[in-house]
Length: 167
Image (cartoon, rainbow, N blue to C red; front, side):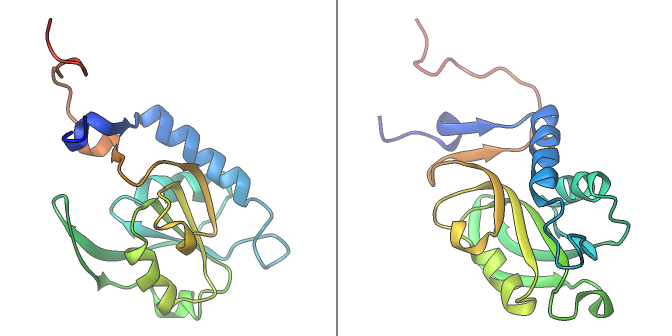
């Protein structure tokens, strides 16, 4: 059965699950910042990194939060990654003490671009695929490269046929 649609080998994430996994990410990062274990700021990679970054910032009591907007997809088609909006340069510097948070590292192209801009930042994702893992310093759950992750902000409730089809 190799002719599967993306939803047939999907990993569906609920709001509860992304919250639990993002908290686990925060716990894993706690005390590992360069300033006596503290982090100076959290930078979310928009849009997927915003919910996990907010949870990490709350759990670690980090009040300085910014975003970097990278476009690397048109719908489900991968494109060349490019910066649409950069974080505040006075906060960022070379990235020292900064947590860059995203929901997922897939191919690693997005994080590769951000890492070139801020080489000393710490890169954390909730989920990681094998091809992108070298670009991540900390993550919670690894999924196979051919798994499509469905995040709660991308979903609506509707009927889905059983995996093996109809009787």
